[in-house]
Image 1 (spheres, rainbow, N blue to C red):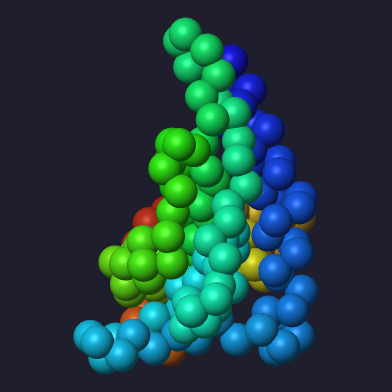
Image 2: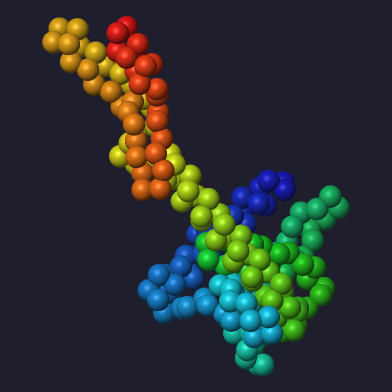
Length: 181
């Protein structure tokens, strides 16, 4: 039952909530940049559910309610979805507690900078791994083909250089041995 609930929540997020905010972001109409005045920290966090503008004293802190199946019964919860760059986090708090604008500001101040750093680190690691593993043009497997009829050799095993470092896939002596086989 818990697994099914997660699947439903995931489907709602990926097919309804995220696409609704993705298009304006890509078009540049909705800039998520937020500057925290007190700590002077810039972060890219914002609420996807709840208040649209934390600086507006009239902003409404309405969050969608969800029902989660627990051991005894269904539990009513507020769904708070917060996004920074390409990372999103969901908070589920008891629906009997009504979140205030002050609560949302505190949550934004706490989660915004940390989630921005986390999203940036994930992106950096992804790009580093992508760079190390090679581009899409280079296959993930290596082969040596030797045509004994015309003594031609084809291989994807070679010395590869990138802008920041060089990698030797296979030692040249081993390459000669493999070619002799």
